[in-house]
Amino acid sequence: MKMLQCIYLIIGVFCVIVSEVYAADNAAAAIRYLLLQGDQRIQKSNLLYQGAFALPQETYGGSRYGYGGRGITPYTVPETGQRTLFMEGHAWYQGYVGQVAIPDSFSKSDNWAELPKATVLQEFNFVPDNGWTSLGTTGYEAIFGLLVHNGRLIVGATSWYDAGCQQTASHGVSGLDLSKTDDFQGFYSVDAAANPRSIGGYMTPIPKKWQERFGGTVLTGNAALSIISCISSGPAATVIEPDDFGSTEAVSGTTVVYYPLRHYLVSGGVTEENSFTYGSGVVGVAFPEGSRSVLFFGRQSMADGYCYGPGTDDPELHKVPTEGGTYCYDLCDHSKGGHGYPYYHYVWAYDANDLLKVRAGDLEPWEVAPYAAWKLDEMDDSGCASIRGAAYDPDTRQLYITQGFSEHGRVDVYTITKP
Image (tube, rainbow, N blue to C red; front, side):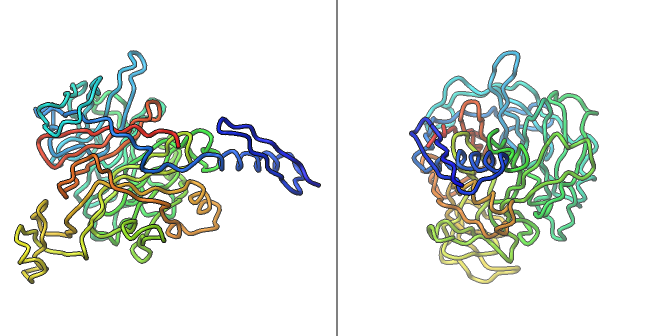
């Protein structure tokens, strides 16, 4: 028996034949799948640069915005409609979160002094009231992701240096009033294929029509921190339901992309630049409505090979042995560690249907690859790529990216159009 189903969409009329559909629920499932197939992939041309605005320099409460910007998330105040951002402050003061109002306009000037200035709404306060102990870590903890969900501030945290892979939890919950010091719950563990460090970080809502198929409302993940063997070596995402935090000690999650070191991300047949190197990093994710794209944002190393040791301005010293490694030519970072100069702001784009194949058990989380990857050419092209965080606002279709390796903190803004 054959049944003809015609699906009328804005972009045109698609007719499909569904064969041997005997049960109504199977027919409905097939139609839902075809509707989702109608969404198109986002490409580089869909990201339109709007400009930037500056973050304040002064100290507010327990921190400041210079050298900060991790865990950024947008929030619209219901009573006033004011557009705002929550984010962690200076890297020295991990766990301190503040809130600013987004200016009404942006500027494409490279001069920080000429940019419109954000205004402070809430001073920095330490959000994990009882400390980091329940993360199961031994130090170097920080907030890598924030998300306002059903009136609560969801906090994704990770140790940025975990040599023993000891972390056991990833998320906590706070109220939106940062001045309260007794309302934090957590941290809670997520039972999923990815390890806790590859879960406790950036977050984004899943569009409503995809939520049933993904089995949750939010994607969360983290990647490419020291020690790399204890975190994903490529973009990572696990499906969660944040309302579960606080109602159970262990929240169930479904990992849909994740690259343990033995299965690190390679080019996947798109371009060599599509691969993931030891100098790469991921700081944000977006799943824009009206598309089937899941976009990861970070920095990509364009170096020919990897180098570990102290950074140097002298190209003649590059790869010359020194104590604990070799000198690494890097005009951006002179610290001892991994280097891959030059670095660029970067996007890795995945097809949501490929991630659903992982959820269905047809693929392993490391067997999916980006369908495209590209540079964000409009941002700083000095080769230093000081990206600290990235978050998407589904209501405005705006993407906010923090640059934070300076006391002159700034937020760059893109609009992501429907494909």
